[in-house]
Length: 202
Ligand SMILES: [Zn+2]
Ligand SMILES: [Zn+2]
Image (cartoon, rainbow, N blue to C red; front, side, top):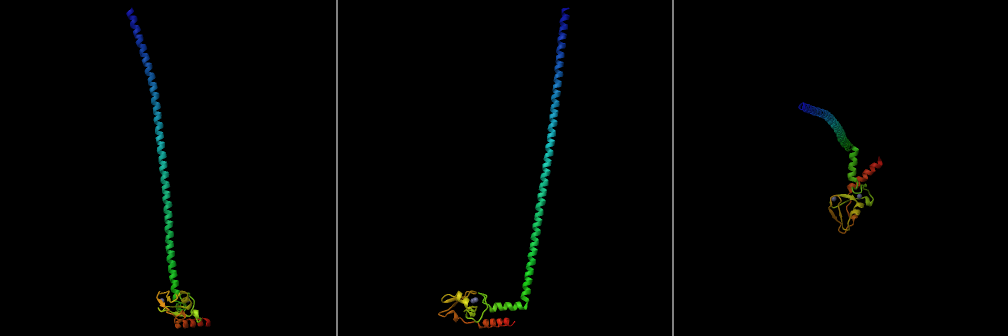
């Protein structure tokens, strides 16, 4: 009888232990399920964040690409404009050069112009660009080298005993003579007088 009682007690203890163990197991299961759920949620959030970041990165890349593209287009446009301007300038310059040389040809082909040029070459003092004439200081004087300038210009450039030609730099010695002793260029003088007579008659 006592044996049976002790056996029953043992069974009861074992059953209690079993219930306890089952309860603990259940609690453990619940708590670990909660943890797993939370972990899953966390993982999901992380995944979303990663997707978001990828999206942002793509957006940035696209913006960057667009900016680079537009900068490239702008610089190409400016380069194009610059080339156009340069080409136009070159064309303009060529046109101007052609026009100028044509005009020069026209002018020099004109009989009056030829006359004028000859007159300027022969009947003007090339230093002061004034016409030769009969007054003493306008008379054309020949230097030792053969070049002719007016007396006034001779006086301006003369040293006490010599005069250096302003065209060819050859020195003409005066050796005691004054500048008024330099020979007159009568051809130049007569042509200048003839020319001014003609102009008066016109
Ligand atoms: Zn002169
Ligand atoms: Zn000379």
